[in-house]
Length: 92
Image (cartoon, rainbow, N blue to C red):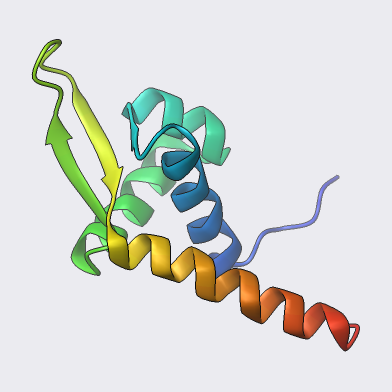
């Protein structure tokens, strides 16, 4: 069985999924990409929206709900990568 992910890893996975889809993703696609249950995904997305890392908007053509990544979310990914590289260099 796989190793449990830490909260920061889950947040990173959610933000990367949005970023890698061009900055905007449908909830269903995010559900699959983040590998979370529906309830867990909603909880994390709500928290990220409160922290202004993710925003919810509606696609103008299809009227579907989508999640977008903000500059604050992109900065989190950049900072996370730096910290991860730093801790990896010490073997943590």
